[in-house]
Image (cartoon, rainbow, N blue to C red):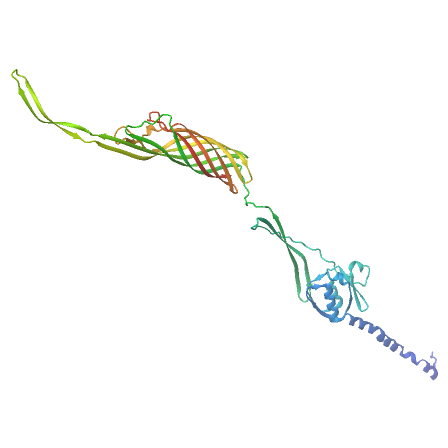
Amino acid sequence: MECPDFNISPETQKDRTPFRFWPLVLLLFFVAFVMPLKVQAQTFNPLISFSVESCTLDVALEKLFGEYELNVAFSKAELSKIRIEAYSCSYKSVDEVLADLLKGTDYGFKRIGKQYVIRKNKQLADDPDATVTKPAEPTVEVVKPKTEVVANKTNDTIYIIDSVLLVKTVMRYDTVVEVKHEVRTDTVFEVKYQGWQIPWPKFRDNGWFVAPAISLGSAIFKHEKAMPEPENGKVEVTPSSAYGLGLDAGYKHERLGVGMNLAYRSVRYRFLLEQTVFSGDYYVNDTLDMYYTVHPSGDTTYQYILDSTYVPLTTTNYAYRDINRLDYLNVGLFATFDFVRLAHFRAFVKAGASVGFLVDWAGSLNAGESPFHRPVAKEEVEPLRFSYYGGLGCAFKIVNCVELVPEVHYRVTNGSLYRAGFPFDMLMRLWDFRLGLTYYF
């Protein structure tokens, strides 16, 4: 079957010639209208390099406009309150640069034509073309208290409290990861006037305690039986001093304290003897010769030739001085009561009784023969002495559980210091000053 031969006339062929170039026309139309828009869009969002020091956000955006003439609309009153860290980037798009600058600020942006509009994220939430930045991270607070108490010359107490506040941590990602911390330190001064005060330490004055002490006193002697006065002489006993070492131990609760004590006490007094002995002041007869006469009656009479010699008066003075000593070991009981009780001071009354055991003695006594003095014999001294005392004291707290305790006692000794056969009695009264330290367990 043969195909028919269609013959097209020259006129008809001339009318169809323009339709051959329609694809070319469409291509030129695409290049003329579509490609410029794409190029224009790429030119409006170019790759830029940008850096800025730490400043407020409005200053950074103004610098971005000044360097690249980018129109950015924003509220200067709002962005001037937002401070950003130093920022630097290389070859990033404008959108990426704005996103970095607004990161963590609760602000985003929308590009309208050749202009960027900065708004809060909640205002751009429903706009699909807007860029919403990541909200700000919550502030992490790290407080490191540091308190110092300083007492100045006006006796004020100054509290210095340093608080370190970690505001935020900013991380920038570029060629190198850069981490910056913003730290603000607040120092608070609290001044409180408390008047004139002594910096007393915290103190404890209850419970078991020990109290070593030293004592110094003055003895007074009383006599119920008068001392015998020797002929042409005198004997004197003068109190000298008394000293001792002691250790108290006991228990104290609130105002009342009880305990036992052990003490060594030495009592000393002066012994004075003055004795005068006279001899002579008389005549001594001496026979020089003797003769006799015989009478007719046979009696014989003896005759003596006598002479006398005068013996002059001789005076002998005896004077003797000695320090007599009686040493005792005392064991006793005592009780105290605080009638004044303050935070760091107390005053108390004290009463007690003790038994003294004679441990040593030395000294001299008067005698009836020359040289009219002799050593004290052991048998003449009472081996035991009972005494009782009362007094006042106070305590000053000096460290955590130690107090300084001065006391004054008046002590009475029952009976004489010497036995009944002694020529005179000695009743002792003693004023005693005591200084000790009390330590509480």
